Image (cartoon, rainbow, N blue to C red):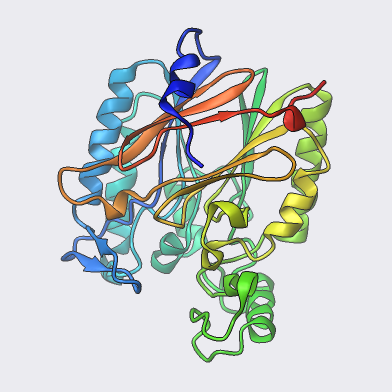
Length: 326
């Protein structure tokens, strides 16, 4: 359900409140091209070229206030003795953008580096290893960055409570010896895989407080997470383990207009029953040489319009009566 070109054109007559750049799943590695477990080609060395062209386009735009990077900047197949170099190399490319870059972590980032090394490199503003935060670039809007690997079998020390909780969860939910295999899992249960994760109780309470404050401040909210939050926008295997709990919190309020994510490389768009848009961004990793997948978003009071480059679909996300505050 992608927005029409006509819809995008109708928003061009007025100036956006702000604009920001987006890219997801660069998954760079200095290794030969490969394929996903589904056989989709992956271009590990070319992906950093996609990012370089993105930064150039974003800088040429001149009116982008910031960029959001949706996780997985390096690939899990990156040789472990090159992980630090690879992360620094990609992070340095983002530094060439003329403005702030807001990062979030994905599973491939955590395959390469533990949180205590990764978060400082990405300038994620947390001291306790957690990677969720929020910012308000203009009075009318607030952006929430969720940590979808808060409860996770990867990234935390093996004896960390969050790791142990995740492993116990997977033991109960996924009977396969390979916890990344969905064999035998039915429907939405197919999300219970080790490369996914969950938002923990403390983070859910934090999210509730942020949305309460945004409501009182009459702000609209964009929620960002590496893992998709709506089954309509994503394959079932890519969803956040407790997407339903997160959406229960979000649906208590009318302030959230859009949930943006990555992880499911083919991309997707849905509108849930509460009128909230869910947009999964196409992966830079799966761009053959000479093609791209990145974009920028124009933010208005009544819509957000994603202008995608090449393989990233442009999408006009107009707020429906259900998610417009009266």
